[in-house]
Amino acid sequence: MGYAVKVVRTDAESVFIHGAFAKHCEQSKISISHSSPYLKETNGQAERYFGVIMDMTRAFLKTANMPHKFWPLAVRHATYVKNRVPSAALGGRTPYEMVYGVVPSIEHIRIFGSKVSAWIPPEQRGSKLSDRAWTGSLSRIVCQRTARPN
Image (cartoon, rainbow, N blue to C red; front, side, top):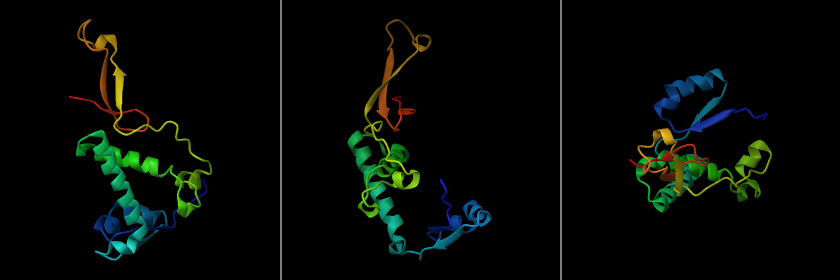
C-alpha cells in the first residue's frame, strides 16, 4: 500500500503511555501525541467518528432487537459500513477507496440482525423429525458467525 503511520494521537490513558502499545510505537518509530485530559474537544475528529460509530451501533442493535451483549459485533459492522460510505470530507470518495485505490463493492453487505438459517448435518440431528436447520441473527458481514439461539 505504501502508507506508513508516523503519528498516533490518543488520550492520556496509561495503557497508551506505558503499555505494549507505547512499546510497539517506540520500536516502529511512531510518534505518540496525547490530547488534553478531560477535554474530548481536543481530539475532535476521533471523537466525532467514534460518536457516529456508536450511533450506528445503537441503531443496529435496536432495529435487530438484539441484546447489548452483541455490541462488539455491531461496532464491527458499523465500522465496516462506515468505511464504505462516501464522505463529503473526502470529496465523495470512501475511506476504503482512499486506502486501497478502488471503489469498494457493497453488494455483499446485509442488514445487521437479519434472520438467517444454517443447515444441520444429518449426523448431528436427533431424529428424522428433528429440525434440519437452526435460525439465528446475522452478526457479521459475511455470515461466519451468527447469534445462535440457546
